[in-house]
Length: 603
Image 1: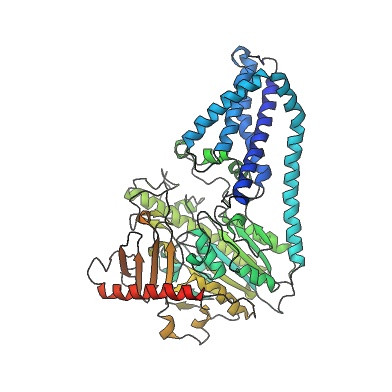
Image 2: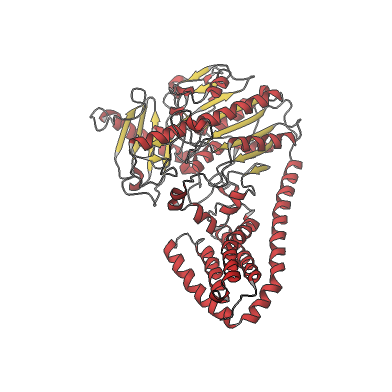
């Protein structure tokens, strides 16, 4: 094989070239998956240039090492070895994008392909070197062009959408929808929790309406957000862990945009709230992925694999999500957008905060606010982890600290809006998409059951002109009612009528207690193949309904549970097993079947 002792820089050139090529290959695979196979990629459009950049940086690491070895021990390094390593990384980066292929299979295939490719290249070394030199600038030009094209297209799209807005109603109020991702009501001092986690929300609640029993339609992000945006139940929507929200049903942002509102979304949960999720429909400005170093690193399959390596994280003691968007970052993005738009036009802004989502890593002093800071060995929530009581309590302490951190910055946001003279004329809605479980029913995390820990979420609505102050609504309500409520509060004569019932009924004198106390609130979760066998949802799809003070859950294997959450808020006593719920069970079965028939007929 040819020696490269005199050419250490040549190895770096090869590293850059292979990195660029691997990044473009990944971009092509993602394009096919997204536009031809309708699959999630969990990437933004910036991936067309961030993936090549990330791969260049990753490939540069072995490139620098090999260059050093060439310089110090030239007899032991050959061009064939360098080419093999870069080919291996290139093939591996592509194979890791094939989601159904096992990781070990990807390694073996990449190694085999790299061996054959390296042999071919070393037999045609002169021609290969010529190709590298002649195509390097061309590859760089392609990536720069794609980067400029994506940025330019986004700016042009937003400018055109804003220019097409119709005149807004006179004196129309602003709307601010805040979703505290993964925040359950049970851990908020606003709802009676013993730890002072939410003093700022308590301050805001004194000027608005607090819903004591708001219920999400799903225990995880995408279907819950989709319900809040469309007023539809999960089974009516396409949103799932494999498919985005389609355009079948109009969204709140679309209706408000059609009525002259500037619409903007700012999401910290880029996994299931990005443009790709379908939630961006109707927003003229949607801020999801940004070219931070962490997000650039995650845009490469190699970078994402390294980042998700649990062994490596535990070894180095690093659990933070690379590229996580913090509360101050999201608030600054929103305020920056607000400062650069026409103040005469009303806005609808949606902000998704991600600070209370695992791995729960609040900064100082919030990391010690509710207990000693501990090294948490499973901060990223491996489902098969054998949790000890002390580890569960450490997670709860960190979770509560994260909520307090988020609450603190929400207070700063409200103060800034008040200083700008905007808070008085802004309809503020604060809620969560779902909660979290800490082994109350043998389950950690969320998305795997339908107990109140993941369904009972905060809901606070403040609007000085139309909503009473310091009011508490005790009846269970569904988050699907939010679009209808917004349209009712704004008194918009919209062409679209959202399903659900306006929550204004609780303070405008139109409430029919006999009817609304019997409202059936549906929540669902679909079967998730990757969970362990002992997880409740492993047996199939789950559905639950809440009616009056009872919560009925039907697990995928047919098992039924009923809880009286007024007397048993943590749902520890299954009335079916205790022999106390047989009459109620019959009523729920009848109600459940009738509810499904009625809702299908209304579609």
